[in-house]
Length: 173
Length: 457
Image 1: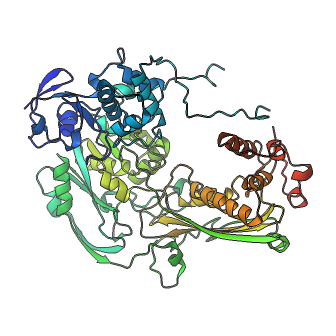
Image 2: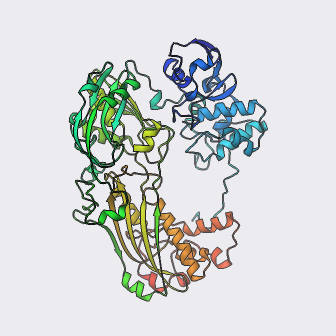
Image 3: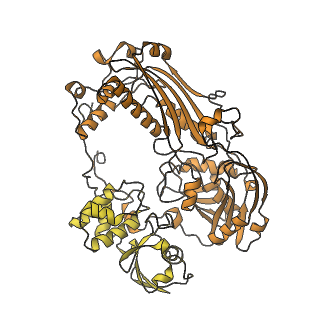
């Protein structure tokens, strides 16, 4: 089988019913898609197959023979980050980072498809991605900022609209 | 002050967004074997026969680890603090919860390892199981824990209850205008980190072990591994710090020791990654808490005293539960100053997954109970719940149940901020309250004696 992975042509030797996740991680050593549940429930293994987000753990590799597969490694590098990657840094949308790669892939497809900055729409597009650290607020803010066309300073962290800072009288004593 | 208040980026942000962060599952070692565990299918059963012969003989199987391979089988997570160990690393002749590991197989592939687990022959004699902590005290309850019985019995050496006594609870109950009691039970919660328990252990040519670990507590886990393996710490190198979520559940050293044993026995690097099902079935979770609170209060809203009974569900083995209950006892007045206390707490064993830390160990369920109870008391008094809380809120030099003077309690400001953030109008008297040491109207007679001589600011 042949795949184009992150713009590089690869020949796959794994058995045809191997999951795309196993092929990427174990045969091709591309480790950003994570085996969070291996049953399609958590979203951490999400990759783009011909531009569409797919759960690589539920996708038999033979079903995508000849396809173009993109993981987060193919979206940008530390020296040349994509806007979604910049947004996730600037908006503190990654904590432990284990769900981040799948979310960035899905958010890239959402924004690339003309998705709006409406957090309800973003939430619907990213439903099925579990994140146990952030509480999702900062992820929604990051994706909305990309959809709005913001620019990002990755040397700092944005303030969050959902944080309410109350000045406390006497607390400085 | 270059850092405080600055909006710094995460140091690991670039790695996280480019797929370059290396989690344990991403570690690549040539010749690595894959492990799978045989786990108990029963909640409580004797193991009458364990035969690994067929599994060990299978092609592609390199090691089958059982209890017989563990140099020190029983070691407690709190052994270093003087709490006796009660949990075998692998079950020997008894399984006490469904999912308890009995054997670990290391093989060329995870599929072979799982097939070998299925080929291990185990005969069980199933026994009645206990799931409800309240039934653990019954005389005819099945005995759950060989070391401690049905509840932990070695506080301060020989007490079977964690007690706190402060002030005079009987006088408080006698003086009360109103007594409000409530029973609160919180459920168990699984932490569900997206990264399941995972370990890579590598036997090095010089005889040492390198262990890539997902632990939240590196040096603690180093001690646990070295104790079970009876190795000096100089012989084990732990590599970690990159954790795909833990939330307390990775404080237990759940996978490192067994993976290390499999690596030792096979002489090859071994990876053991739990499935999501195993993580849900067998990894330590936040335990359930049973809490009974009786408050003695005055008609003008002071809490004179609290009597409390807590039963903590430890699951089948102690792990950190004694620590969790002790912390719970120190916090059982919550953010409020109550001078007369009578607290009894028990760590009770059941045939469930051993419970462990999760975000505020021993305190999260307690806070739920305390705050729900505060609402009930205020309602019965016909009092604004903010006023009730703010009056009783900890002030500088109020003392905790274990008699520590609070130097910097923030309850007053937190409540005021909460009201402001949620659009609740507080009256002038409540808005003007501060954390400063009690005096005047905020220092009724019953609180005079409990003020400590803490450092203050």
